[in-house]
Structures are given as C-alpha cells and as structure tokens.
Length: 111
Length: 115
Image (cartoon, rainbow over all chains, first blue to last red; front, top):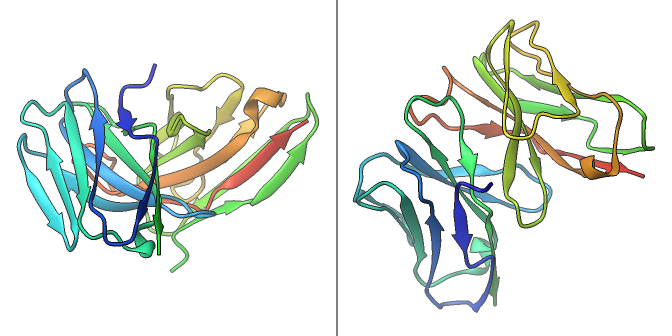
C-alpha cells in the first residue's frame, strides 16, 4: 500500500514552460519533504514543510503543504533543462521515525 | 567529507545466493535506514536503526537482515536472493532520527540483479 501518490508519473515539457507536480494521501503528515534525484545518484533534499498551508519558495520552485496536511504540490516556473530529474515527496507521520516516499514524478525538460 | 558510502555499486547474484550490502557514514548520524527503489514505486523502507544496537523493520523487511554494531556502519544482508529482490538499494542517514523533519542523506545506491 502506497501512502503517498504522486501525479503525473511522467512529465515532458519544453524549456520555459511552467508545471505542477502533486503529492496526495489520505493520511495526515506532521511534515513533508521534497527530494530530487538524478540518474545514478541518491535523492537530495529540496525543502521541508511542517505547517498546514505553508508555502516555501526556492528560486523558481514553489512548494505548498495542504491545509489538512494530507497533500502537497511543487510548482516550477520557467523550467530549465537542469530541472530534469525524478522528484519525490516524502511524509512523516506524527510520532514516527521514518519517512514514507511517494511514487515519484519523472520530469524531462527539453531545450 | 565522504557522507554515506555504499558498496558494491553493482552486483549480480544467482537465485539462492546470499550477500551483504555495505553502508558507512562519517557524519555521526544516529539514524540509518535502507530503502529499495523500483520503477513506479518510489522508495520503500526495508529496515532502519535509531542507534547502535537498535534495529527495526520497515515496510518490506522479508528476505533481509540488518545489524548495527557501530554508529558508522549499517550492513544489509540478503539471506537467499530471489529475482523479486532485483532492485536499486539506497542507504540513508539522518542526525538524531527523522522525528523533527531532519534531512535524509543518501548514498549513491547499489544496483542488484538476481538471476
């Protein structure tokens, strides 16, 4: 059973376009993280959100945590080829030691 | 600073063979974990440890053993390899557990094929 479902699974866009990736669950999380993974490497943390409704910006990337802390979104403005990679959301339930990862969104930005 | 080091990077096994994937971190992290990554399924937790001498099961522990005799090392043992264990395995560590939203630091992965 996958606690976190991401959509879309694959996304191929032209350089300069905007995109949004979604991470949804029926469970409540105390915090949610987004990681990016490039081929042959491990995931690297982009951001952590902990408050319902929280919005964080990292240059052209905007992350939002849902009000009910069950979902999150990642919006990229004016995508660049360097944004290409696998984007993974990961949530932690209250009192738990572990992160549960989403199914992943593979983004390709075409120059 | 090496971070999290996994060996080997690639391994081919025959069904029924056993092997150990090594993981070492030099950041003095208390929390260490093993994940497997399969297409379309993200990362699934196999086993984790919150400190030396303490281990626990994750989502998919069957067929795997772990031990944590030191803070630095967290090896993953495949007892009798099966084709279903063909995957990419990642070791990850974090300071003082992940209870407070701490960052997971990952190794580069070990790609295992079981024939």
